[in-house]
Length: 114
Image: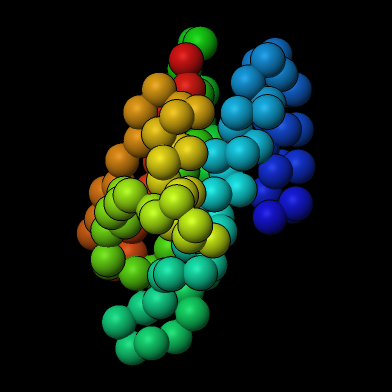
């Protein structure tokens, strides 16, 4: 996850958007973690995980692609649960988030920052 956070932080610096760094690093870390932990291709193999960052004016989208067609679902984690809060954090630290399947299989899970 450190590599993903560092790549995102570097892009934000280059784009003059460093004020988003802490929120984006947290969200990117959660999205990459989810992709690595939960995304498998239909034949059960681990999929390649791809991080993308796109900027348009003051808007920034971070997206993580993996080979699984299964869309993520935000759920309520129990008070004592050790996992299950990732998408809640993504929701709290980004303007909005979503997921879209790709035409060739897999999906992008994205988060928008303004």
